[in-house]
Image (cartoon, rainbow, N blue to C red; front, side):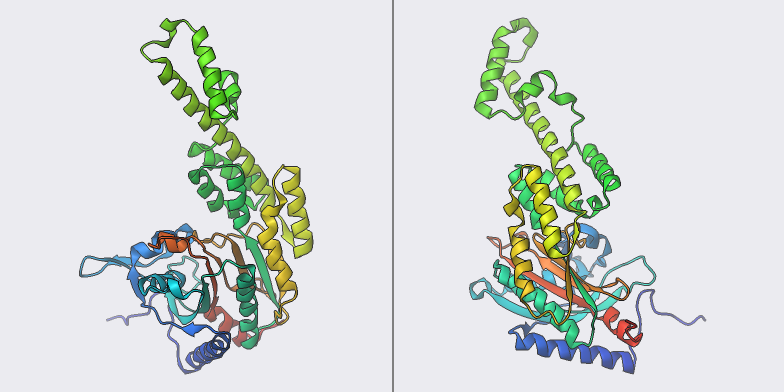
Amino acid sequence: MENLKKLPGFRDLEKGPRQNLNRAYAILSDLFSAKGYHAIDTPFLEPTEMFLRKGGGEMASQIYSFVDPGGNPVSLRPEFTSSILRWCLEENRLEQLPLRVQYSGPVFRYRRDGDEFRQFHQAGIELIGSADPQADAEALTLACQGLAALGVSNIKLVLGDLGVYNRLALQMSLSERARVFLLDNVSSLRSGADGLQDVTDRASKFRLMTDGRENNGVMGQLVGLKEEEARSLIAGMIEREDPASLGQRTPEEVAERLLRKAHGAGEQSKMQQALSVASRLATIQGPPTSALASAEDLLRTEGFDAQTLDPLSNVTTLLADADLDGASVTLDLGMARGIAYYTGIVFELIDGCNGVSLGGGGRYDGLARNMGSPKDVPALGFAYDLDRLLDRREEGAPC
């Protein structure tokens, strides 16, 4: 009989690797505790719905889910953030904000890349209850200091802000459906003209775009008008029509139909502009000062409020005076991280030797409401991929 073997993407941790992992846990725990973050252990198994309510994105296709013997849909945790926020809400901790929490342990994701572990170990923090840029700076600084404590150098802190696209959508009065589509496709837009064409084709498929024909004739006159002005224009048109041409529809029904079509055409035109601006924003990257200047020029040229960038600018200003233990900072406005719950600052900790991500995180101010909170709760956090970190150190950190 053939010997049984472990599943692909899983590994046995023997004495040396296990000791290294435990040592890393201990070093990070001491650092996080010194900064006021207390430790929480959460279950390996959680309700599947908890990870799908707003956790979608790329990670949704990687969750190990099944129905337990009791008929309950459950999943192995793919990350800790949702579990920590579930604990916060379930234990009625909202009156104790801000909360500083740390965690560590294995997580599980199905990944097709044979070089990626499907069970891997994370350690990280969540800061729940503060929307202040100081909170973002605190988490980013601690993320860099944790790597330094583990002996990792030559780290690039790559910073983005999905909040920029949220604020653009608000300025343009995009529908919720259009806003979500825009955010879901930021990473695709970063590839320039090809990315824009691909996203535009998808938007057309979902009837979010216009080919321009809707804006000819009557529709062209109605798009962009206030509702009272549009109704007045329609009333004048109907008065000049032969009543027989209206068929069985009343003048009121005709007016409502035209208003709905005009609203749709206006929404599609706005989506076209939003994707055009977003595609150029998403390609901007570089040192904070020059990248922000480029983004501000673009927004002003397109008629948007340059204050859209203020939250990101405030955080980079704070980081300039922070002790990042030698980590360099660069902006990448096309970063999205593949997890749907992020709403603001997002970041990656990149190994300067090989370009591999050693961890990352971001702000997720809307996740609490999606998990049952009566209100939004500002929050952010990060996690390290300790397996990659420890493998890097075993390889001798060549640069």
